[in-house]
Length: 339
Ligand code: WQD
Image (tube, rainbow, N blue to C red; front, side):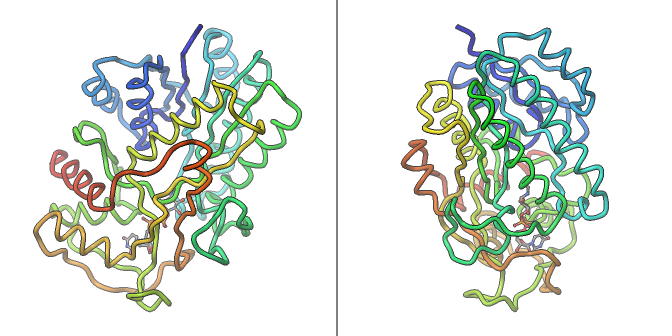
């Protein structure tokens, strides 16, 4: 029986950490990546950790013929974890067609191939961004899906609908969408982590780059929100805990334990932390003051978002184990290793 898993975007931040956990669990891994937002060095990092080099194929999933040829050539893939997508919220506002083509066409081409297989297991990288500003906190999977604030967020919403509708007419296709909250940190070995190409858009890489001196100062986007200290609240989850959630979801599908052939889970810690709390924790971890200033709010930011993880805890048997401090220690170790 094959145990071969395809990980698209497997050289990316989350994808590479999932590859490590899959190999730790004995799966054979094939990575497809077009290297548009990652580096071939990540393959070395994965191999250095697991001592097993995954099969790698440089391929752009927007090339439909290439996707068809790939699945024709490699018939014994039993599961696909699909990370390959563009993910910069701000960029998506300026380049909507790039995001709709890259994030949706690639999903459609893969699903078209999986539909033809006897049985297939599909895990989709979704995001809490589909909830927008939820009406109540913590956010459950039954919270209403709000109008997306960006084309990026819209591609996650539409992506989930495409999978749901396809699963309705393809009993052989079983799928799980994992709605990530805010992934941060890196593998404890610091051999893989978050590679920020260009100016980091996300909070934690900007903090660590400021801490190491690569950035002059962190701008905190607003401290006049209706929260405990005026700054936005998010659910920051260690990327290794997030990676383990993917293995739990995949095993659920392979073992046939799923009660519906399309299921959705929130993957977070269940705890909210403010921007200033993250900064304070980083200062403890790095034993240095962080240079930051308060500036205007960033358009599109929600006030607060943190997960109700009851469903993933109960149904997947998965729970986040690592703390915000653990994640920041690993992020800081990674940043120092880069420099
Ligand atoms: C977190 C908080 C900012 C940078 C986004 C996507 C989400 C997912 C994760 C892909 C906010 C504040 C940030 C800075 C700041 N991406 N901040 N100064 O926006 O919650 O989520 O990234 O899957 O889909 O929406 O994450 O890290 O950008 O921001 O003050 O330089 O940090 O205002 O309150 P976000 P983030």
